[in-house]
Structures are given as C-alpha cells and as structure tokens.
Length: 309
Image (cartoon, rainbow, N blue to C red; front, side, top):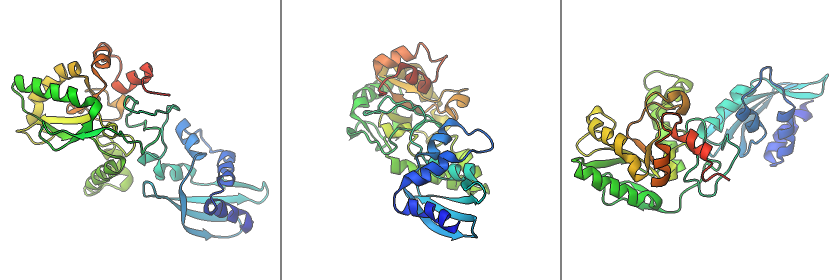
C-alpha cells in the first residue's frame, strides 16, 4: 500500500490534481463542514511538498506549503487496506492552516467581478481573484498623509477634504490603497504584535483578524477606501473624534460610507472603525444611507448585486 500513498505525492509533484481532488471528494468528515471549506477542499492549487515521510504501509504524513501566502500545514494520510480507500485524519486543521486565513480561498459568494470596485468584502468574504488590482491608482497630493487612491474616488475625496476644511477640520489620510502584498505584511505585523503579548499564532490571528483584514479580504485593496484622521492627532486615537463625527454625518454626501459602524461586528467580523470609509459613489451612497440601519455596507452591496458577474 506504500505505492498507493505515493500516488498522492506524485499527483502533487506532477500537477495531476485529479487524483488528489478525488481523494478529498471521497473523504467524509465526521461532522459537516462549512460550505466554503468543502469548496476549498476540492480547489487546492499551488501545493508544494516540503517534506514527506511514509511511516508504514498504511500511513503517511504530508508537510505541504502554499507559496502564495507562505502558509504551511501538515496532512496525515491513511489508507484503509480493507476498504482500499484514503482518509485524512486532521482534515479540518489542515484546511484551516493553509491559505483560508490568508485569502487564497478566493470567495464565498460564488460570483466573480472584472472591475471589483463595488464587490462586497468583509472578514469572511474575499475578492474572487485575491490578486486583483485597480488600474487607476493615483497619488493624492492635496491631502496630507502620502496616500494613493483610485481615480474613481479621487475627485469626491478632494471635494470632501475641502468641505471639511470649511467646517474647520484639517483632514489627513492615514491609509489608502494597499496591494495584496502590502496587506499581507500589514496583517502579519499585527499578528506578531499579538504574539508578542504571549498569544499562540492561532490566538494572535483570531485577535488580529478583528481589526486587520487578511490579504485578499481588505477593502483597501480596492483602491477606493481610506482611513481618515485629523492632522493634529495620532492615528486611531480619540483625539480624532470631532472629525470622525463630521465624517459620520457628511461623508455619504461625497460617496463615502463607513464600512464598520458600531454594533455590527457580528456581521462584518471587524470592530467599529470610525475612521474607515469606502467610496461607492454619490448616487449609491445616497441610496444606501436610507438602509444603513438595516444592512452593513457589504450586505447591501451584495443585495444590490453591483459589479458582480
């Protein structure tokens, strides 16, 4: 049976996914897995063997990695001699430790987008193509902070900046467009911060994921999202409260919506972020504001089916 187990190794090495995929399809876990995990189990790509160890004629251990997000995981492979069938003993942990947490899952909605500007994103839903990039990123010279943004949102952002000035606020951009790779480093940095407090990697990820998006899941990757504060204040401190209150009442007039309002963490997965605004255009924003007490932005965009193929 050693040769049978070897078949899995060969399937990965030779890019012959059908054998591996079929084994995952055949495997029936003791309890029902979430839909996205079941989908992920038959869509594994970019797997590379780091180490293989055949224990005996019926058991092997695969140490696998996904280079796209630098994640490693170990999969125990068993072959039932009587049933002549492969099983995987730690399947749930294996899937959880691969790229699911880093966005390689792709998407949960089941749709796709060519221009993903209006695609619904939150902690649980990523871009269909996690490497998608906007093609119209420009540097924002007029507003302090040294950030860039999509040209689609540029003019409305400048208008909002000037209106805030009239109201007595000096706006600063603390964050703008971030590529997938930049978001990877941002997220990893926050995970390390939490680990420095004594948490395990798994615990640190669970905590960091409440306030930092995994790569491929971040609205900043769309190029239409900004984190806003006051020039005179440190980022994300209560010193910014006055300008955040102004944004809460006025940002929608310029097409910007607060993505993570207070009391919505059970829906978005993220803590309240009064500084985080996503541009969806003035028309959509004026419409959304009528439903803001019923739906968070991601929910509403999904219902509107804007920009989804």
